[in-house]
Image (cartoon, rainbow, N blue to C red; front, side, top):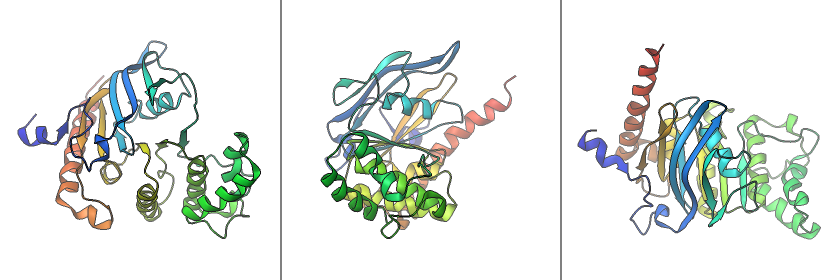
Length: 280
């Protein structure tokens, strides 16, 4: 690795050094020796990562490297084959309170209104009716859906449906928010709008966010750190401190550091894609 590339790379087990950097906060999630197999297929192995309180970490890698699988293991939806995930010091053996996930394909109930979809998790968790009545309008407004409380998903655009899914997750007031390519199913302009609105929401309500994406630009824009997965089975190739000034806005896209990190991640992943073309 060149010296310039080396300067980009953050140690995998580290949590940052700047007092103003969320990655320097106490650990919220710790992944150690994590591996996942499906039969004889080893998807990933020996994953070791830590995520600080209030930190946004994005995860990129080639298709099939196990990004979504890793996210589901963090959520406790599927078990690891080896290693462990701890959240706030407790091992994860299944879904737990304080962790919410936003999926790529919205996951809304088509027979429920926006209000009913956002309220669903709260009702399932048996929150008092008065609390639900107070919280649901707040989070609907937070994601910009005020006025659409009685609309059904088929009456909403893709971006509005994803806002609804985000509001449903945020209404649970999680400490950890897991994002599985949440903007992949919307058009380019809507995707950019949602990216910046999510960053504004995070500024209002900082929480630990693990954000899986295929978009290198999105990974650099959203993340305080970018985790790059590579290999077969995949592992952590490097973890990059993004070091972009806050708050991030459209001007961030023209910042020299944004370009530097984007090009570094792009070249790293393209090397693997090109190599894969020659594999039998």
